[in-house]
Picture 1 (cartoon, chains in turn yellow, red):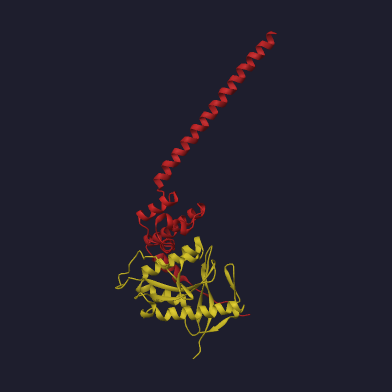
Picture 2 (cartoon, rainbow over the protein chains, first blue to last red):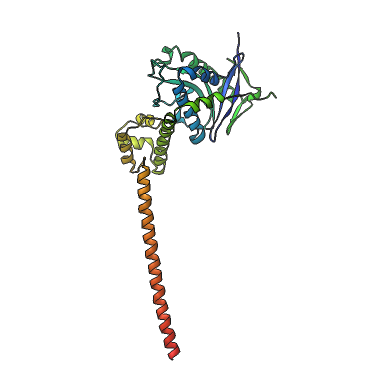
Length: 170
Length: 138
């Protein structure tokens, strides 16, 4: 069955320097980013809190600079490569790699947040938690890149023009 | 045109509010230190390559250090401070001490300047007075 998705605005995640968006797949209750929040809040609350603090700090003070994201093939991810989580969750038996949140940095002012999970292996292909989110993030990134090239949508300052009428197959 | 979909993010802020302040400060401090280093490098017209050369490291290593949230040791920070000849972390006590030192220096300079002005004015007044006396005697 073909599934379609849209880019959605995240209320109150419009900070001084960055506005964050997400992607909502039809028939799912939440956007990918909010699904990540709902799934991680009980299992990894401290790391999720640090991830959210990172999103807010980047958004409020620094802007989405290249150095603050890690490369995940076509997509990006948070936290940056050298980040070490400060708080460890009690429920966490394997905390070597920490939470990953896949995303797409369209500019220094616009970031689309996808989904993620706790990474349990060095290579994403070996991580059963993250493999699916990584693949989906890259598939969505390709679709969004194409849409920008074909001028269906356009990131301008802290906004993406044209998302109201933009729907894509995933 | 369809209406834009806006999703509620209350949970994001709820999680943030429930996160220990220590964790939030850690994230904030990590980003702040790296930002300071990047700004100092720009001020000194120095790039990552030059810094890597000065520290005897690879550019890739420096790039990782400056990737936002490296867990710096005091040793690493001191090496960077030495290489760029600038302080990255200044303690509040040091700021206060320096502020006092600078304020005292400014105060002393001001006092000396005022004294010098008064002295000159006094000389001018005496001279004027004597001139006036001379003139009136004449």
